[in-house]
Image (cartoon, rainbow, N blue to C red):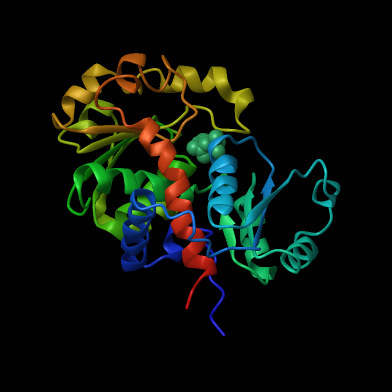
Length: 301
Ligand code: CP
Ligand code: NVA
């Protein structure tokens, strides 16, 4: 019997598995065969404690392409929202489906599910990490610029779930990550320390962007932090990715954002709607990258 694999964190993959998954995502995108239905009859349960456009649609479409189906579960409609223990829920749900994807507030909700599930568990975003987005971001970079090894990525803004997963990507794919976050909003030390010398922290966005091959940002207030919006706008006001920041990067640098974006806050409209921005191919690649992930987790020989 194959060992059960989960995708709670990007670090659940080895470097070569991540590179293989990116290559497979590109292959699935460029050579779609409607007769290839490796997940025929299989079911993905999707538990969403928070909103989603891209994650929900890409997983649902991916399962449909592969001949399977997806079940949307909101805690409002299940006993999860009424406090049924996570371990009981994980045992029950996993006894009826082939895979479980969760988007939750607490990272521990996903790790607890993984501990008690009899089928693969996928992290569709937690307060700590967003590994599925990194699959799509890295696929997009590889498609447009080739291997990211040895390159420099600049993360401008909140040291949040996306930033943590970028730190993991830097370790696995061997690139340098420059991070510029306002004081008090830096990524957690455990993530930075574990990644070693590849991570370089800067006070100013222009310094972090210097010579970067890829510039990335994310919202100033993530889901669940809405009440901190005003305070965060004040703290992040000098951390917008604008024309000056992109000019500090290499001339052929790309701009990415996981979306949804706030034009005029973390990124100027000129940058996100400009020629260096690849946010829409990046969003579209969620579908292809996660098809490769589902195949990897569910079709192991
Ligand atoms: N980037 C991302 O995860 O988008 P959604 O919140 O729409 O799923
Ligand atoms: N950091 C953002 C990402 C959204 C896809 C959030 O957690 O809301």
